[in-house]
Image (spheres, helix red, strand yellow):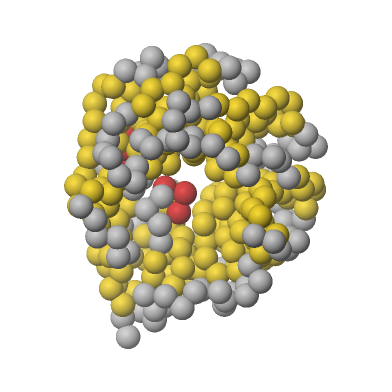
Length: 324
């Protein structure tokens, strides 16, 4: 039986005013409904199309291959139950790496695929309690960073694991920042972690050889909780970080994490999210996200300059009713 898969892709083409690709196709490879997130971390652009990661209706993680026009090519599901892929990335040796969660006792899982969707290997990283893999960063030397969390006695903690190209653990660290939502590699030996603890936004520079913290900065919002979600490096060794309080926010810091400015953007009054910021070829920046209005999920993107001034705003109303 064929199932119809209707996808809404919220992708880095947001650098232009086009905010969404929409395409329908059917698949006979997996006889289950397929689900995925609107976040760009679930969508990877490759030379001849896209790879999309998600999970089936019965809790099996899957990947889908399409061409550049979103025409279906193939789909592969893993017999890991229950399981879900949170993010997919390309490794230095041109393989696909997906991070997620699997098993009745939730466990971080890292899977390496070739470009035909065949599994090369699978690694599971058990924690002291239920654990989830939420972020993957393939480093320039072939190693992989895996960010996630684990829960013990209803208390949540973050974790960061560094593996080599074979998936073997090199080191594992926990930081007092509760969540790690993005990783930016600066050099062969350093990276920036973006996340938060309690009501604070958190930025940390770490040594990639050991995982030790070089410096840490916390940012306090005027009101509400500050949730930082994405970071990009500017042209002057500065950083631009997107996130939200009750509404979307962008922060600019210097190379040492000292805040230069912060700007808020009044998109809507309900359930705003700004998960991604990218740099554009003209030296500006686009950040993008979702908001809920009248029970509908809407997509927005805003282009700003290096002073945080708005150059244009684009939105896609009623992108989905949330039933994806």
